Every structure is written in structure tokens, then in C-alpha cells.
Figure 1 (cartoon, rainbow, N blue to C red):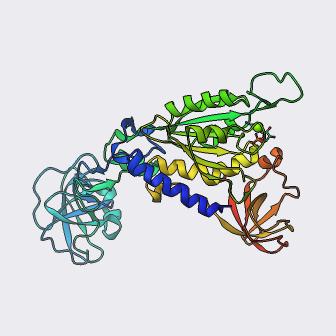
Figure 2 (cartoon, rainbow, N blue to C red):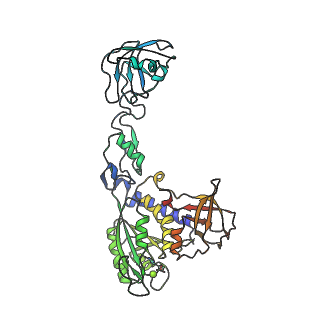
Figure 3 (tube, rainbow, N blue to C red):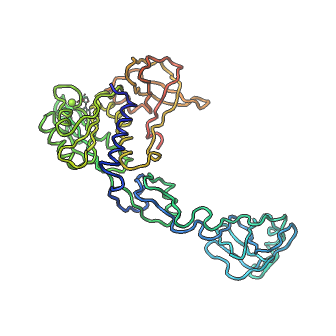
Length: 431
Ligand code: AMP
Ligand code: MG
């Protein structure tokens, strides 16, 4: 059976080809969005600065700007003949040994080459007696370093310099940068359409009444919608499909004509009523079936191709709600981020850290085990994790109580309290 790492690598490789050849990023449709709507979207263009930053020489201090050629030794006096405020520059000419009062963010007059903070002058001693409408003299407490305290025009970003690259997943600091450059709209990739489909005769949609004992609610569709929320995608919900070959064929055929990706839950085991694998093979192909993980073994990665120019990638998650979450987190969501066109450096990573086990855990070698646990820190800040005693995969309350998955390596066996294990905090703990 393929390992989780091998399957992740295989999916990654397939998506790479998809992005290059099947549905090339360079040809993907773009849309213009307002700055505030672009968060978590993938930039579809390179952005260059429309102007120099700073746009002019700017003062980094509240103090005084001194004209070129001034003598700036300790004890020297400079005549202050005007003011430059943020938003209201000094206009006029300046000669050596003259200067202007200046404030942080104000334009340094072109005739000036140095700014000194007011604390290094006698300004505090004289300011209460000054008539600032007339020239006045200040004395330097110490020698002033030439060219000090000026943010030079274009020093940080030159006009036309690249500031953000295509494939950037836009975050609040990018929005800050774009706003600083006055950019009100950006081009992002149009969202991919992701189809969701649940299968099972026992399922009832939330909001509908349960009419007999054998029914349960379809929790996988709301769960997946919630897990996929951070992605810049559009979701098509195909609802609940009964355990029936022709209904399944019809639903998959419709979804593949309308979506870029199809995700299903359940119906991929080897039960007599599991039709999805049959349908996928009829309308496309299965690239990988089953993966050495627990829970989540009956996972399908395939593609739908019949009568399509561009294949529709297919992820078949197990029906069990816990298995569906573990499979989505480890195998589906990373692939979806990659498909969005985000640069590799921009796709959210699964944080994995080392923690000390607080309990003995049972495990048999052969599959990676994702056990539910509660991660915490001891008084010294070191990570520790307690693991739920029962790890049966139908436990849904436990999944909600857990804050992490404890990842036990494929070939490892049971582990004793005190040993070091790998832990994946759920991503929503970090957001
Ligand atoms: P299956 O993969 O069809 O064998 O289903 C495995 C288990 O998951 C069964 O107990 C199903 O009742 C349950 N299940 C399947 N689909 C869902 C769903 N959408 N929501 C909640 N439970 C489900
Ligand atoms: Mg079923």
C-alpha cells in the first residue's frame, strides 16, 4: 500500500502537470478585485511600484533640517527660517548655516542634506520664548553627522520596481504594501470550482427531519465546506447521492462538466453499495486507491476525463467523518492550494512539532496513525500531548474536543508515556 508521503508526492506531481499542461496557470482567467476583497486570494499579476518610495527625501525625526555647506560642529549656531510639516513642505531658498524646523514624515527641502533631532540642540531651552514667525537661532549640543536622519527618495522602492509576484497569496501585510502604493484593485486568479458530493442511503441533509432509525445526518458536506473556507474557491454542492449506480453516474457526470475538482465522501470502500470507484473508472481513471494511514485508508485519487478537454481531478474521501477530516487535511487541502496557483512558498504548511506523550498509546506497525489528542505546554513552555484512550474512528465528539492530531510513524508500534511524538495542531488553532 502506498504511504502517506508517497501519495502526497504523487498528488503534488500530478497537480504540477495540471497547472503546467492541463490547465496552465499562464492561461488562467483573472479577475479584478477591490483591495479588501483580495485577502487569501492568489495574485495573478506581478505588481510594480507606480512611484519611488519614499517619493521625496523625508525626515525621520522631529528636529531641524540644515542647508548644504552648514558648519555642524558642537556649539555652532544655525538660523532657522521656516518650517516643513508633514503634508506641507517648506518653500523658499536656504543658504549655508540656515535651516528649517522639520517634523517626522515631512519633505526635506532640496537645499538641505542633514536632519538633526531637536534633543541634540538647545531648542527645549528657548522654545517658550520664541516668535516662530521670525527667524531664530538654535545651537548644536554636539557635532551633527552629515546626511543623518533622512529617508532618501526611492531608497526603499524605486519606481517600476517589482514588489509582489504572481502567485503571492495576499495577506494583510501585502494589503498594507498595496495600500501604501495607492493600488485599489488587483488581478487575482478566478476561483476554481470545487464540487462536493456525499453518498449514502442513510444520509439526510441538516435542516431536514430524520424519519426513521437508520438515518444519520450528512455532516461531511458542512465539515468540508468549513475546512475549505480559507481557500479562494467556489463550491458546488451536489448534495446527497443515493447508493445506486445510475444515480452516482449521473451525479459524477454532471459535476465533472461543471467543476475543476470533485471531492466525494463515502462509497469508496469495498461494500456492496460502494459505487463511486466503479463510476470513476468508467468516466476516468483511478491513479491511487488506499493509503497506509489510520483513519482514512480507503482514499481515492483519480481524474475524470470522458469527453473533457481538461481533466477534473478527483478526491474520494472515506465516509467516516473523522477519516474525512484527516484525509482532507493531509491529502486534499494542500493539493487544492497548489491548484490555486499559489507559489510553493505561499501555500499554508501543516505545522508539525515534537511533544512529550503524557499517556501510553497503542498502535500496530504498518500504517501512519493520526490519533486525536490535546496539546498543551508545561510550565517551562515545552509541548506535551495527552491522547484520547479510545481512538475508534467513529467518535465525533472526541474530534471536536481534540486540538491536534498525534502522528505516529508508519512502522512504529505502541509508545510509552514520556516518549517524543510528532503532533499536528489543527490549523484553526493558529488562525
Ligand atoms: P462508507 O464509506 O460509505 O462505508 O461510510 C463509512 C461510514 O461513514 C458509515 O458509518 C457512514 O454512515 C458514515 N458516513 C458516510 N457518509 C457520511 C456523511 N456524509 N456524513 C456523516 N457520516 C457519513
Ligand atoms: Mg456508504
